[in-house]
Length: 351
Figure 1: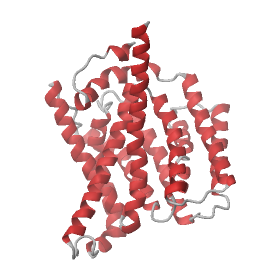
Figure 2 (figure 1 turned 90 degrees about the vertical axis):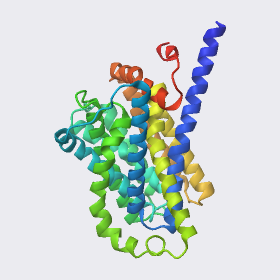
Figure 3 (figure 1 turned 90 degrees about the horizontal axis):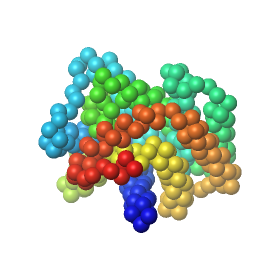
Figure 4 (figure 1 turned 180 degrees about the vertical axis):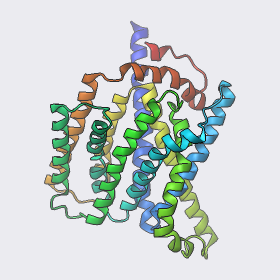
């Protein structure tokens, strides 16, 4: 009995630790982006630096796993790469780019609330691609989330239409992004079940997808900016470059921590943690950044969160993909342990 309680306690502590680890990156990058863009008004350039950092770190991670495991990592052919990865890469690049762009205009609280509407678009595109079936429960989820979003933005004192449209477009693209990513990672013949391999293959196309938009909107301003290419203070330039690289580390760590949390616990844990993360961000935004929220705004947030919680409950009750998730945990956890904790027994995952 004592051993059983110790195992339960260890599992609980591990889950809490992984959730905190995930929160550090997820909440951290939200406030980092808002902080940096207050004085550096080039969100697309910032995003491209992050993409480059993620690609480099993913490549290093793949080599580390390859050296320790002795197993070669998957490398797609050009045909599969351009036909099957490109749509996901384009949607992901635009989602991230527009999300970062919106920080120039809106508050963290409005961004967080609007971004949560991505669930609506994910459900919509899941229905389009026949990954989900329409049910009364899903209709209720849509009504709750959309109603909550309307209540949150109604007569908001810090509402900005331009920023709201940007982040809403990003949410729509996020729905496309995650639907295509799910399809991409479930294609066994591609071998991209490990998110490290997925990130490695996505980043180059994401960079190329965002580059024309960057040239058209920010290219001339960046090339003539005193903060970058026409700098006067080398120390200020090095600090700025260090801050941009730190954002890249946060972006890579976010994807890494999400995968680690799912591989060691479950996707349900990640979904529930995401709900409480939204609340943490809103509370921090009101206390640290001075974001103003009325009672109607908080009620809208509560309605929206109840819709997301209902969606999580329906997914859990339906039990879709339980066998797939079990395969992911047993096959992918080895790579994560090699990268983060070394070789150790996996008996706890089987219990």
